[in-house]
Amino acid sequence: MLGKLIKHEFNATARIFLPLYLIMLLLSLINRVMFSIDNLSKPLKTIRNFSIAMYVLSILAAIVVTFVIMILRFYRNLLSDEGYLMFTLPVKPSQHIISKLIVSMIWNIGTLAVVALSLLAMLGTRDNLESLKEILDGLLYGLRLGFGDKYGLVIAEYAILLLVGTVMQILMIYASIAIGHLFTEHRVIGSFAAYIGINTIVQMISTIIMLIWTNIELSMLNYSPYYSELNEWESSISILEAVPSKVFPFSIIFTIILSVVYYIVTNYIFKKKLNLN
Image 1: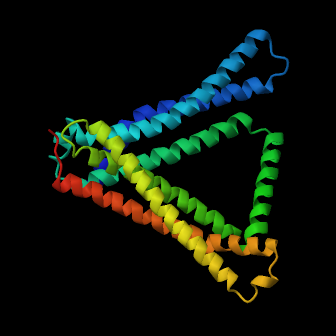
Image 2: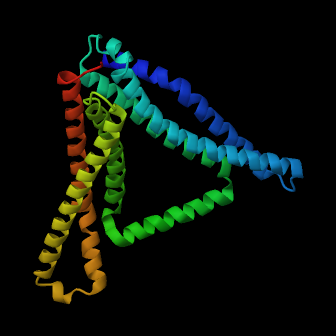
Image 3: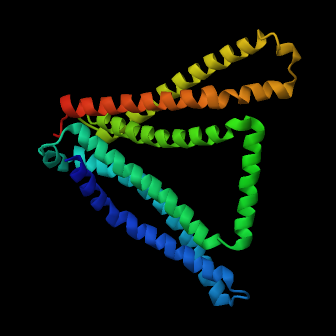
């Protein structure tokens, strides 16, 4: 049944995203053609400028729509009048949450991929690609300089952190909407208040943990028998080396824990406290 929910959610949202993606790609190709023409006439320059402006707007629209649709589909489909029908299906509340989460992740990744593809289609000339390669080589050189042989691990951990961070943000929004729905009135305002409250608490906890961790690391470094022999550069390197072995793994685990908490809160409200009146 989860597969059917995902298919239904995907079909319901694809009719919005696919035309938007197509428009973005078409505009990028039009701009590519315009960029390749030398000595454009005044009317063609006007068309080119308009096309560039529309392309930028299409990217902004895709980002905004991805965020807005994620919220509206969750709220309208589960917590408005449609919720009466959805919760009469032989489906667990957890499956509703997971299906929404999976489809939201698909469109988040899809939007990022289409934006990258459209930029490549529009600007992917040989000179631009060579410049991009030089920039990437410079970034990799900086990573190797800072993290040594662990630079590949840093890239992998950062990618994982971005992925789980996106999941966490979506689930935090779901939990905020669910908490806001516990109010008998002004549920939208309650959802906003819940989101701000949750975000504030999490930021405070994160800051406290990072301060404690930093103090512990500095204390260990101060008591190291080799500390007096380290110069400022070597001390900075020793701190950087903690990123792949401690900072990123902790951040990933902490983010996963938050995601699980948000999921449990949302699922509990749907199972025990759901009120669609």
